[in-house]
Amino acid sequence: MASEQHTVEPGTDVLIRKVDSHLAALRAGLHGPELELAERLARCLRELVLCTAQASAADRGQVRVAVHYFVLRRESRGRLLSVRSLTAAERVVDRVARQLGRPDLLT
Image 1 (cartoon, rainbow, N blue to C red):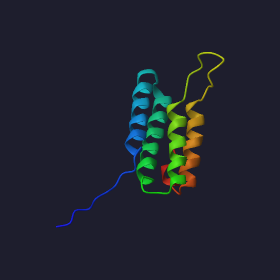
Image 2: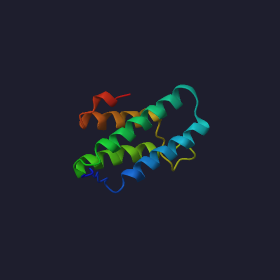
Image 3: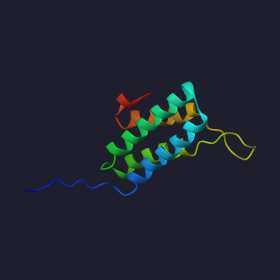
Image 4: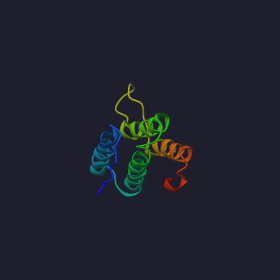
């Protein structure tokens, strides 16, 4: 009996862990609509990571950029740090989902 083997690209688990870890940190400080948006973005990113695991390097790269944009979002703590809102992350994630033919994931 042959068993189907799925090869997962290196980095897939890492990207999902980054999304989950960042979402856990956001849950400590966000509430209401902002938290709901963060959770929707995390769900979309997880799905994009999984559906592009066997895709081209270019497609995986787009998803990696979206994950990093979401994860590296910072609150303003001084002039040296850029401010990225969840809305800005939403635009990036939505753009990547559209480019990859996954409009069903749009938030």
